[in-house]
Amino acid sequence: RVVKRLLDRAEDHYALADAGISMLPRSCRVAIRAARLIYSDIGNRLGGMGYDSVARRAVVTRRRKMWLAGQACLELVMPPRPRNAAPV
Image 1: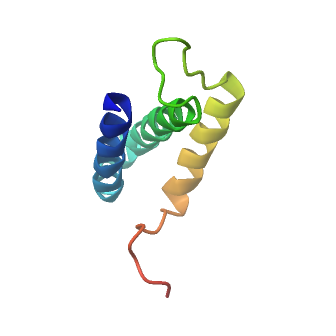
Image 2: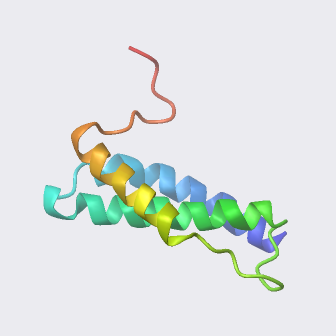
């Protein structure tokens, strides 16, 4: 239960960070966004493991990390719409 609460809280922080990442200098946005996506994915994998962070390690493959880094690069050109934004 503690891990789930911690990850739920992290998702709240990720949502807040998403808005701020676009205000960072372009030179560091991709790295910060990639890290955010990768850490969030680790949390998602922990959720899929029943939030048991002791018995097994949550692993994000190198391939998946590369895909997430690519997504972060794309978002430099086409920023994601905030979750609570209405469609245009």
